[in-house]
Length: 567
Picture 1: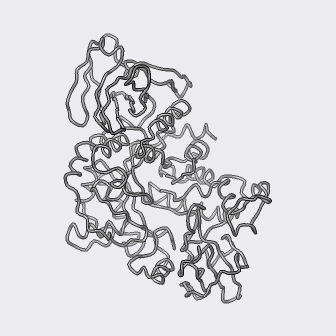
Picture 2 (picture 1 turned 180 degrees about the vertical axis):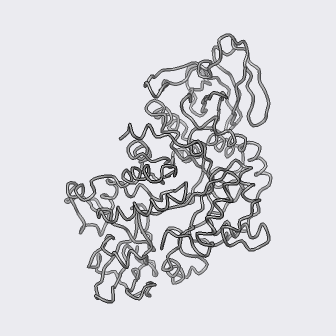
C-alpha cells in the first residue's frame, strides 16, 4: 500500500497550491457592500475580486457552504429563537449547488471565470452524516445508527415536526430547546407503517451532538458504497475537495464512538446497546473507508485533490496508510501560537528523520472555520507575519482563513448569512501582507518540495541549541533559499552551521548531516555568496571562508527572514 502511495506524483498546480477559505454567503454579503450592488449568485462575483486574490498569491478558493442545506436545520434555529441564522453548511440536504447561489450553472461559470486568473475552486463534503431531513432518512432509515426504543426513558419528543416530507414526522429531543438535554437522538415516525425510530445525531465525542444531523452507519456496506459514489460524482466536477471531520470514520474511532467493546467500562453513555467485539466489527467493516475512497478516486478522478480535516494524532496515518493527498496539520498553528518551540522542533525533526514527504502533504494554517481567527490568535504585528511567512516558505499547502488577509476579527459561523460585525479592511495590514507574504506565495515552487529541504539547529549559547529559532534551507534547480524564524518575544544572536541528522535521499534512504555549504550546493571554487532578502530586496555578501564555521545572524523578537542565495 505504501509503495503505491509513494509513487503517486501530484500535478504541479497541486504541489504549489495556495488556498483561501470563504464562507460563501458571508463573502457575497461583504462583496455586495464593497461594490455597492447586490451580489447573490456565484457568477456575479466581480472579476476584480478574483484578480485581487490572484495578486495576493492565491491559487485556490474554498467555497464553504455551497450545497443545498437542510430546511430542518434552519427551523431548529428559529424554534430556539435564533432567527438571524440560516441552516448549517454541514447539515446537507443534497450535493447540488443551492439555487440561492445560482445553482450549478452559476458555479460552472465561476469555475471558468476563476481559472482565467489561475484559481481553482474547492468545495466541502461531509461524509460522516446527512441533514436530519435528507432523502436518505426517508428512503433508507436503516442506513443510520438508530434504535427502535428511546435510548433514555426521560427523553421526550413533543417538539414541532421538522419534516419536509409528508411520509414522516421528525422531532428532535425536547431537551435541546429547554437546554436541559444534549439532543443525542431525534425521532422519526413513518406514517405509512407507524414505525418509530430514534436516529442518532452526528457526534465526534468531543462536544455536544450536532443536533441538525443524522449519523450514518458505516458498518453497512451499502452506506459505504453510496457515499463513495457520491464522493466520486463530486470529484468529477471539482478539482479540490475538503472532507469534513474525516477522522470520525477511521475504523478504530468509529468503533470507539458508536460500537464499544463488550465488557468495556468506558464508553459514551447511550452506546451500551451497540456493544460489539472487535471481530464482529472487523467482519462488517473490514477495510478503512478512506483507503477505498482514495483507491477509487485514483481510477475515476485522478486529478482531483482530496484534503482531510483530521485530528486526534491521525495525520500521519491518513498520509502514510490511507494515501490522503493533504491533511490538516494542527501542530503548526497550535505549537507556534503557544510558542511550544522545542516540541515543534522535535516534531519537524522526527518527520525529517523518517519520511520527509509527509511535510509536503500537510495543510498548514493559522486559523480554520472552527478556530478563533488568526487576528485573535496571532495579532497583527511581527509574530503574525513571522508565523505566516514560515507557512508560506515551508513545504505543505498554505491555507488562509476568511478575512485573515483583511485583518478581520469576526469568526463566521457555519450558519451565518452575513457578517454581524461591520469591519473595514485594514489597508495598512493588507499592504504589509503584500510586501512580506505575497512574494513568498508567488515563489511556492522554491519551497514546496522536501527533496532538498534541510533543517538546522541554531546555537546562541555555546553548545546549547536554541529551539526558539527555526532554520531551514531548500533548493531547486533554479533557486537556493535560507528560511529563519525567531518565535519568541526577545532578540537573539547566534549561528547555524550543520543540519540535523535526517533523510538526505528518499529513494535510497540515505541519512546524515550536511554543512550549510553542502546544503545549498555551493560550488567549491566560489569565494563569496550573496544573500538577498526575498521580501525587502536587501543584499548581504559573505565570504565562504567566513561561513565555514556557520552563518551568524542577529534576530529581533519574532523576526522572520528568507534569503535567496546567489553566487
